[in-house]
Image (cartoon, rainbow, N blue to C red):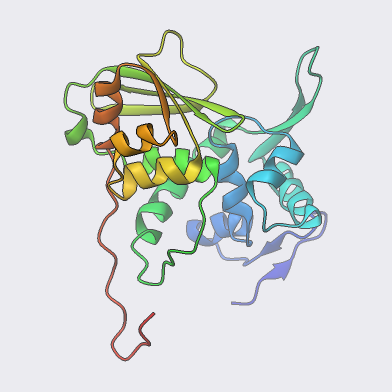
Length: 235
């Protein structure tokens, strides 16, 4: 069914279908919208930070998507207290429920047979993937807190009771601090990279419990890709 424009909501196109799937796609089905949501799952961001995390999006499109998400009640704006006083965007309680949607699409989409090794992953994309690809069975009785520093961005990562928590910021009294870059961390976690070699050449710096870091690297697994359709071109 062709989407129709709704009066009073800029760039808000609706399917006019009562099905919950259609109702949801009315709000987050536009290109870039769920990636904007992904960028906010770990905490508030300024417009410039959102733009930096989504290098392929134009400022106009980002502003349009944020406006629609605000109008729909998924995102809100607020001003940080002094001395920062910056305006940031953050998910509402209802908006945070979209984490389940983003995770489900992530688990499904990572099996795409058309994924390219040339595709890059951003900071928030990688950190959100740790929630999505976490394997509770592999964690076992691990109880550890990590500070992960990627460039100028810091995150807390806590594993306990077979669950994982990832957030923007730093945990109190972490068991280990990991400082590296996005590509190196992604290779260590998802491509069986050699932690010892990365430490030796200076691609990673670790403070604290190295064994806890080694355990962390084995808690995530990408599923096998789906088969390509018969007769498709080999990539």
